[in-house]
Length: 325
Image (cartoon, rainbow, N blue to C red; front, side, top):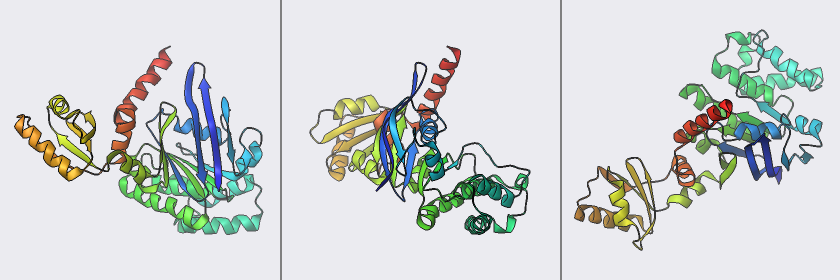
């Protein structure tokens, strides 16, 4: 059953189309990862689904409610953890949670039970009476997630939840996110530009670039589709490699990225032997050649022609140009 349904969702700011006819469905109890560079349209999409931004065109439903016509019902059905901190530093962990519960009209007894349960879940029960100003970045994030599901939402939006956290804290937080779908049956929409985060957490990944979804599937399926049989060669003579391999019946595709040439072939072991023989016979020097398993970075490169880092830089350039104009 799809708890989130999105059809041709579009957001336009003047002449700039931030989100361009995005469509997808999310099944209940899954983690849906939005992967893409900053400025790709991830947060804009979330803000429209959360009723924080008006929709230019298209339709969306959450928990059966129309995002444009049934905003109060949608807001009761969702929780949200923003990129920027939204906790009150002057309040304790318990008081932040209690205030949130009051805003949603939760009775006192229900609030008390829920706060105790969730602070235990994120291992902050022993810090419930401590003011948030004394919390570390990881503790704040855990508290924000606990607060986000205080009112038992069906869908939780996590917008770059581990941004700025150290690797150990990030891994710790990943465990909490995974537990939410198992213990609380919460459907999660996660935006991130971290490849490892998207790969580890997501049941389904949507790769978004310049406002469009360019790939949508399970992480393993996306990787399999672009490189069940792939050879990677490190060499400064990428053009020569391409010229000598292009057109051969066992070569399906060739992509270059800096010092690396990726060659999709029909049979990896046989293709590797054929490739190295050709390179040696043509006196093409190379540092390494081998069969490799694609990563999400390779998937992104395959669909966009750029690495995520290059797209980040391009997005910043586009933003600077829009501000100047």
